Length: 182
Image (cartoon, rainbow, N blue to C red; front, side):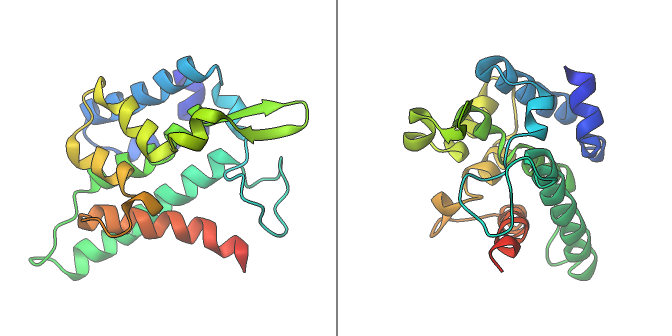
């Protein structure tokens, strides 16, 4: 399962701290175990259950594509900000990339595939993915800074303190969502 996950999301290699990379992978493996999904299920899983014009379930814009898109946008934005504002702001790229890889891992615990399509299950309605994502991270030893990124990446973080890495991830996620409302 780990090898397939690495094939589908090669951006795990962008986490240069080997210990953090392994812990990040372990969170995903735990989510698969709990949810019963496999890495290949993510290829047919929609990245959102919110209706968006022109996006069909089973299209190329699946859960894997969304994760990879968010990681890529966050990573590149982080590099630019770190370079342009050197001496003022320092971006921890490993925390940013690990947060991007994990920001939606909790979605594996909030949806189910039925004969009629994908649905949000009870848990997903009352414990949204930012919360379940952080919960998955605790026993794996994910740093607090990364759990913070996951916790505040969505609307649950609005009005809360966000680190620079959390702001970058928040906007990278919404860039990879809001463009489909256009």
